[in-house]
Length: 400
Image (cartoon, rainbow, N blue to C red):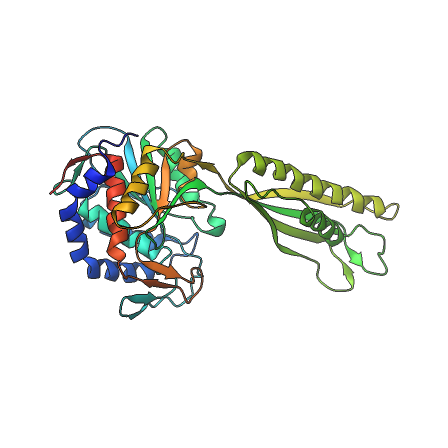
């Protein structure tokens, strides 16, 4: 990717566009409210996807389609047949289908599940797609606007993985719009590898079958080993056993014992190292429990399943895209906060595609709770920053 002009020159040329975005501020908030009130739990985003698809079509985006992963994609043509810039915002939320989603408003403050994460990102993407219309603002590279599925939790970045795999060699840069904010520039992708470790045995009565290998004992021993591991502070690494279970009664030897592990680091080398440690701990606990079982009883077995794998990586701070995002942040009177996080940008970064994730303006809090809120005070600044970043990446041909 090349930035055809400095972000400062692009920003200056887009003064009319910023004024139009500011004038449409109430419309953007209505859009943010409307999309946030459409249920979209991870894995069941189709209702919200249909709504976004209709908006893409109304905005005149070309080749509006829904792919096999459920992503909604629309293209704004560029002046040249070059690699495209992808602008992503995720559709899904963490809230179950039956969660009440009504948004309440008090002045500039909106409250409701998903209003910031990612109602704001989706509304911003639509506002920017409307402004970069190919007439008032023409760009050199095509821009693919992508509403992705499966960004949250167990979604494991499903939508982003599918889109970027299907667009191999066709994307020059990517910008993910995620939540509120106008300072953070995520250019380091936090990797996350998640495991489910399951031990299985014959089970039996706690007295009559005494001596049978106990899957929960093995699971507990493995968890104790993992809890005692020394983790590096640099790069910051986290290993968390988030769930553990098994058994049917207090007086029964379980047939099954299991636990789930969340491993996070920005270093692929570190992820691989602790992947090996997790597997070694699981197998060592299997061997130890089987060694204690009574003669003639059946050995328990262990299965290790990877239930999530979010890739990691980083884009250098001097990459043109990161520089553009930093400059765009300063041009709205903010200081850029270079950060590490897990977002849709993880996928292109891991593939060697320059990518950043930025907030879409305003402030917010209590994300992933039913008390989530978004405050639109100076929210248009975030839209202005995103506009300058995207147009700098795509290359400005003509503003109006």
